[in-house]
Amino acid sequence: QVQFVESGGGLVQPGGSLRLSCKAPRTILSTYWTLDINWYRQLPGKQRELVAAITRDGTTNYADFVEGRFTISKDNSKRTVYLQMNSLKSEDTASYYCNLPGGVDWGQGTQVTVSS
Image 1 (spheres, one colour):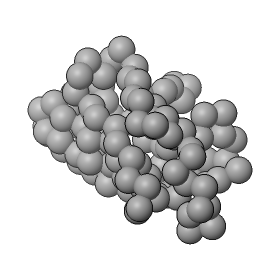
Image 2 (image 1 turned 90 degrees about the vertical axis):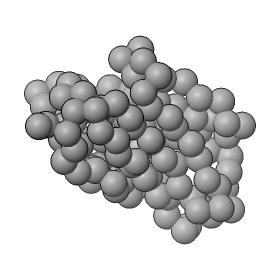
Image 3 (image 1 turned 180 degrees about the vertical axis):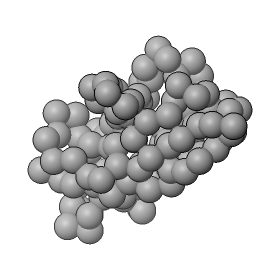
């Protein structure tokens, strides 16, 4: 299992943007390019849910609630997956996590708060 480090969260006004980063440990440098990686979020009092996914060949998928506002991307040279979030809404307020599909070791996540 791999534990990622999430960053980039913060407080933003409705309609604003944030870019989240998900960095993998150096120990998997040689195999990082083979990984499918997902972004998840957990709203207060709710279960964790899938936000976006990217496969090793760059295919992306998004939850319906994204509605074209978010973009997931992967930079193998930096061992990092990004989640560019635009047109943020108050209902996007959550802790955001990344992980392998089916991964069981979770990082600390990064908190996103959308509020005026």
